[in-house]
Picture 1 (spheres, rainbow, N blue to C red):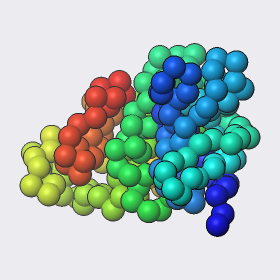
Picture 2: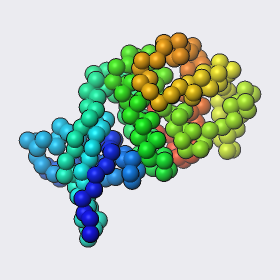
Picture 3: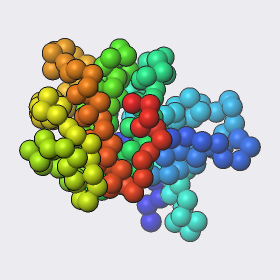
Picture 4: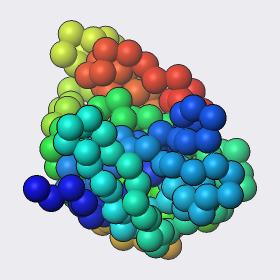
Length: 230
């Protein structure tokens, strides 16, 4: 029986487990969300390799008797160290990770989920403060589409429209036009796209944020605290 597996993986969360080990949660293209133990104390090289937002090739050992997993190796391709250099970047990245974890990695389309998260996190690593929130909304809106939750935008031009019985705040024409515009952006290096593609006034951006958060909160049954940092 095969016990060693290889994945294309993104580290979403890491927390202490016992005196020297850590538990890590990954988004993988092959199996969606995985949880595995990272063994080793402060001197272990895995402590620097298995960190939030690092992405690459992951080797996992699975014990079928205990149904437990441990990290055997992680070949990091993208470290994204710049995310932690700016609070706004880190806040948006944390919101992205928690959204993925809370919605079961997108419900099954794991390769696309990994691609989407990867390109947005790559862009966040270099983003200035004004671009961070736009990238977060881009992710949330594309995630809504991935989950099949996209509301009919033409129905959102009236005051307090409803989506699946939940009253949403008013979304103006400019906010809707902006969402339609960014949803057509390709999965490319988003940070290198023309600045005018991200241009939106503050009110419309807030309306777009409110809409995305309301749709996802309805689906998840709760509002994620990390969304407050977007």
